[in-house]
Length: 67
Image: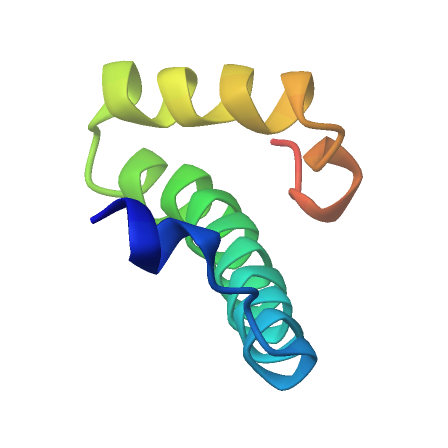
């Protein structure tokens, strides 16, 4: 196990992980914003409000249409 930790990670692997992480973060933000919009429609106010608070905290509220 220690020997594995001592091996350096190739730059290509690190770059790929970064690209995947950035793509996941973008998708996460998109899902959060869409959840505010979609959950408010069928009357899931508590879920929509929770997502709205998270979106506001993460600075994503400007992309959320306010009622």
